[in-house]
Image 1: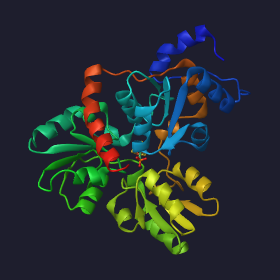
Image 2: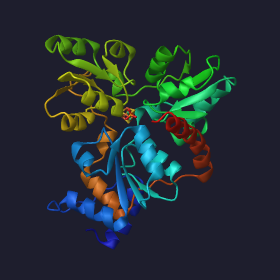
Image 3: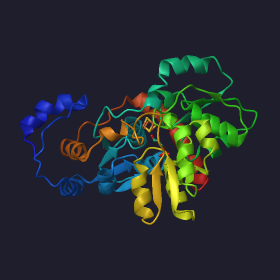
Image 4: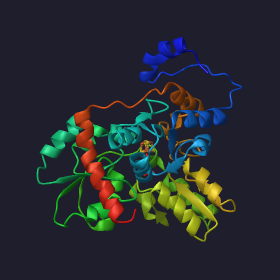
Length: 336
Ligand code: 13P
Ligand code: SF4
């Protein structure tokens, strides 16, 4: 427990993302988080890329679509978002009367950062006949400039909901955009953004790994580059990959996405083998440095202090909500 004085002294720093209070090392964080959930009527929503301990304390673990759906419908007073900033921001956009806290305000996203709203606005103005379809991994500023939002689990059906002749700008992920162009036969204009985690998988190392594990299937997230997707046995969102690992009959998989997902895959399939796909650097696996900023300690602290929380300009929130609502509506009708 932390005193009120310390709380007040740290509040400003906390809002800037500098929460650095020393915790009693004997504190049982799992128990404390459960206590705070009850005391504060809080719900912990976690993305699959969070570290295993965080996934284990979460009330819901999911992909970006599932997390947005949960955030919209929760009756909890406080949403503790164990993910990155654009995800927590989306929760606040959808459910503004709730307090949305995030363990580390600096947990950003390279993909979201690759698309600054002022630049994108100019790009959009150069193509006035295009509709704008944006991947949820973007800021509220980009969402507000978009006609509809997509995630990796609904991008195909949402793009296909537009007539074939409708010109489309797809932002910010050029890899997901190229993949959707391929599977829908569209020719969307792509913003030149990419995810730092998914664009560094090594085709050469994966090919060698496949030779060493001839029965292993390669399963990949559509944020990966085309050469990886071309040799993949299955492509899907994190939830899609997890479900595939449960329904497919193989016993070995090479997984081309962030390593956090392996925790649920191993839990759901204790007799199967999951090998993280190797990146193009000296590391054996591929972690997202933004997702991995969150720790159990920071979850506990943000619940205790109710800080840092997401605060938004109301006009921006309302503008950003419209294309997300459209996405949720199409997804619901499609049974997603
Ligand atoms: P999904 O979990 O929606 O597939 O998204 C992956 C991702 O990169 C989130 O940052
Ligand atoms: Fe962003 Fe990529 Fe990290 Fe997802 S994995 S949060 S897209 S940098």
